Image (cartoon, rainbow, N blue to C red):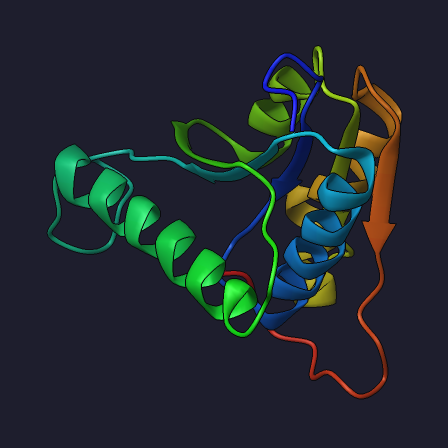
Amino acid sequence: MSTTANPVVVGVDGAEASNGALRWAMDEALVRGCPLHVVNAWDFEPLADWRETTVQQAQAESEALIGEAVRAVSAGRAELPEIVQRSLRGYAAEVLEKVSEGAALLVVASHTGHWMRQIVLGSTSMHVVRHAHSPVVVIPVTDREPAEAAR
């Protein structure tokens, strides 16, 4: 496997839908023979965050979320691509837009949040489809999966 190949990048947020996107991206990275970058974007606003936490705790939670998603999706697989776990601070849509620079492909799950959240905050998948610097694949939530809010 070439470590100089442009990576497949996938955004994960802890929702089952994002694990589906991770599964698809892992398969695609194997087919392409390129690395897979698994990205979780997190933000920390000390005055707006409703729980007692620190920036270090927020980052540690993000790193744990990525690790758990990779473990869950990797279980039972005979072959894995080179996997790079990236916990990046910032708003998900902007972080994914930035990491799409130089990527072979950006993979995200369709929006799984409540319709009101989508109206007020917008959709990460809608943003990256419009602004990413690489091709984007949006993995839809199927009718067999419950729509759940991103964590």
